[in-house]
Image (tube, rainbow, N blue to C red; front, side, top):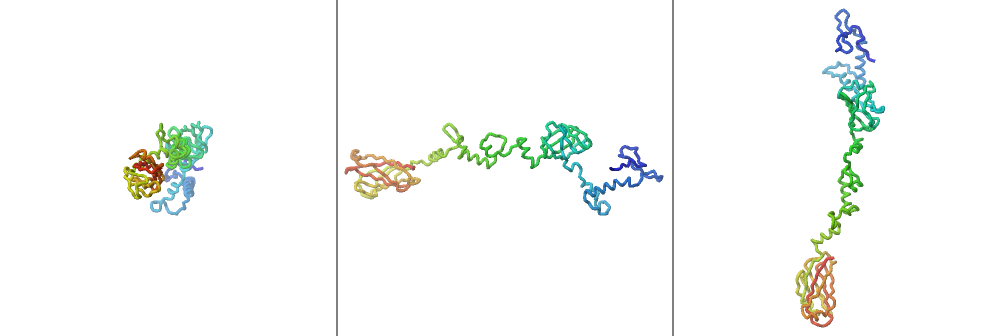
Length: 351
């Protein structure tokens, strides 16, 4: 234990401003405070302990502006209660801290590590070094293992839950801070306490457009929404109609015109040339203006009489064959050896 100078002889105790009394000068009559180990022993031992705790070797030079101040350096390095992480425990609804609460300064603070979750009914804090108590007020319900800042106020002691990378997620959940949604939560789309992310949002958007969740979001006759692939095909067809060419060729006298004859054409038919004569008919190569996507097309034909309708009817059914996206052969054969004058209309449709 440290020794007080108040117990020495020749100490002036008349002025309470001087703790443990005031040292008196020696006026020559031996009335001064003694110069002894009792007076200086504790002082030198205290300074030696500071140097030891700081791990500083004496340089055997006087402390001054030139040599530096080793004792100040040692004192600065001394840790106090505010530099340590103190334990925070509880006895019932009373929190315990290993400090002297009665000696704390107003606004003095330090950090504690909680050994338990905050007791729900805790209203008092006690300093276990002096058994003094104060009212406790809280900002956040701390958990065991978390750090808490303790601030001594004039009338109470504040406990503030500290946030770090260890407890950030738990605090966010407890306070309902937005966290990222998982895929199931994003798919359901029923919660408003989670935040979407680009990746998960992309996945659920794909599901609602082309995947398993798309049905409620597709457009119908009674519901606005996204398009199905069938609807998209119809829209595409508006600007790319399947009926591409409409026209005709005329002046055909079946089995009565020489090979190479160019028949009269109109509409989208650019040319109609007899390319082959058979024993009773003609093959006419038809070239049309608008190219089809491929040879998967069909031709709707109708035969118009331009002469004697009874004689013009003396033909077999007309057949055709796709040659290229812009050409087809039409074969007309007569059933009797009469003279015809035919006009054949063609609607050419992409399949």
